Image (cartoon, rainbow, N blue to C red; front, side, top):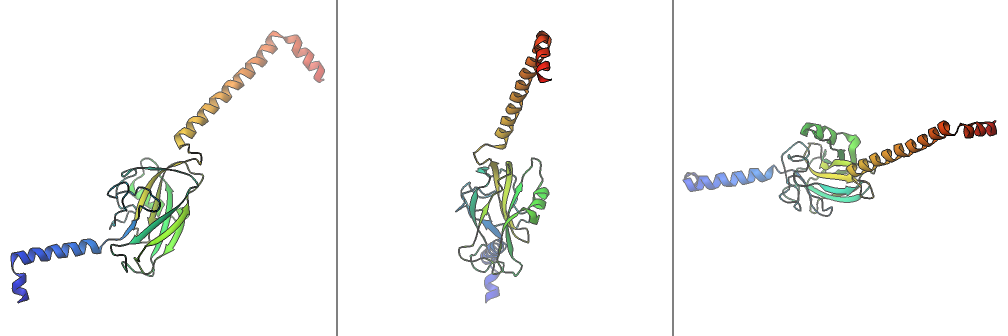
Length: 225
């Protein structure tokens, strides 16, 4: 009988394995594909792997900024992201409420997972949206987005949906000419120093003339009057 078969130790072990596998795969949620954007995805197995299907509700599938590498990219760049529900590519997690959002947020050193999630869930940080009422589908979903051109420094690009399931890509955003935030800050500091030195020379020259050549100053005043 079926009960007699299941009562054997080997059969029970097999049943437990099957149940574990079924439960482990049935809860998979959302992931970003490595291609076509070719950007390393946080918590992926390698720097060139697809993102992990996850049950996490922190918007990034866990991990921390830079945990799987940081991609340097210019502000204003346009890129395309592919993403999907899973693990099957047909009919996983269907819901009329399904709405993917592609989100870009600045990252500040010391931001906690809660800080990042709060920024990811802010509609103001949305670059694109994609309804997905049917859940997963062959080929997944795709969005083309343009990164903000005015941001410099660390940032996070995420695909997240209304249940806070998502993956994240960690970025270092540079100026369009490839200058990083640190380099831009250094150049600005150098420019300020140069301006101060030039002003010092000019002021010093004026002071020298006033002190050493009073007749020149008097003549100049008379001409102006």
